Structures are given as structure tokens and as C-alpha cells.
Amino acid sequence: MPEAELCLLFIRPLNGIPVRYIVSGSVAAILYGEPRLTHDVDFVVHLRVTDLDHMIRVFPSPDFYVPPREVMIEELQRQQGGSFNIIHADTGFKADLYLTGREELHAWAFRNARRMDYCGEPVVVAPPEYVIVRKLEYYREGGSDKHVRDIRSMLAVSGEEIDRAAMQDWIARRGLEEVWQRVAG
Image 1 (cartoon, rainbow, N blue to C red):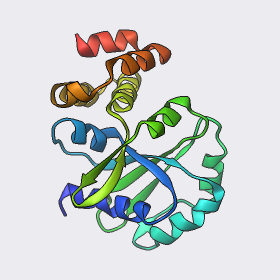
Image 2: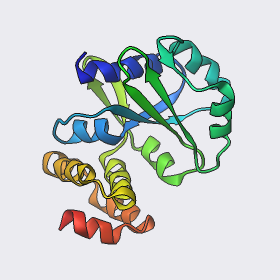
Image 3: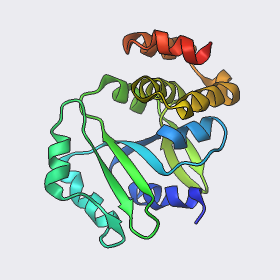
């Protein structure tokens, strides 16, 4: 199954329920930059306990692994936002769901999200500035060059669409100036 279709295994069900989400991570970087392989799709999701029944319904067992309800509730209770995975059983393709919590950067990303078409399906994508800031954080934490390549690709392909002032503001607020200099230099 092509990678785009694997992402749709998660995008389509989310589009069918009243849950706000944005696509982030490598899939968003691909949409703003150049294609590359990825093994998952990242979502930032605004979930409430009352939304969990919707999630369980649209990602049914045994087709999908969804964590036990208690685990999702525990993650929802984290102030800075927890996370959990949903895995498609047949392919092993995974969705990483990051919960918004009270994270100001996530709230900004939702306010500035972009609507796109992804293989004929509407999708809400995190703004490129958010994706770059998060990739800088991941690079600082783990040092993986894939984040640097994604950032440089986004700057080359979508550079004119990027609000440099907003991006620089978030880079400063997150203490990422040194990492940005290494990546952008």
C-alpha cells in the first residue's frame, strides 16, 4: 500500500468525527517540502474524554490497536499534553497523537492551520512555522539529521509562504536560536 494511502487510514476516520486535529511532523514537512519515506503520521489533536468513544468507533479493533481507555484518559490529564499511538494492524503503520493540553504553541498552530487536499481528502495541516519549530526541538533532543533535511527542504520549497517573523518569535520563545543557527547556517 503506498504511503499516502497509509496516511489516509488515519485522516479519513478523523475527518468523520467531531475532533479537531492538525497533521504535523514528517507528513507536514513533505507537504511543504520534498517527498521522503516515513513510518508514521503525526497529529496534534484536541481531545476531550467525551471524544474517546468516537476514536474507539472509527479505529475499531482488530483493524487498529487503540490504547485502553484508561491510558488515553491518563494522557488527556497531562497539562502539557500527553500522547498515544494508534496502529493499523495489517500494515503496522502508526499514528502518533499528541494532545494539545495547555501548550501555547499547539494553540497557535491550530489558529494558523492550513486546509489542503491530500490524495483527494481534505486535511488540516499545521503551519510550516510550527513544523519547523517542532523539527528544531526534535533535532535538539535527538540529533537526527532527518529533521535538518526536512527543515531545509521546507525552506527551499515553501520559503515564500513562511512567516519568518512568527517563526523567529517561536524560535526565541522556545530557546532554539543556537539550533536554528546550526540548521539554517
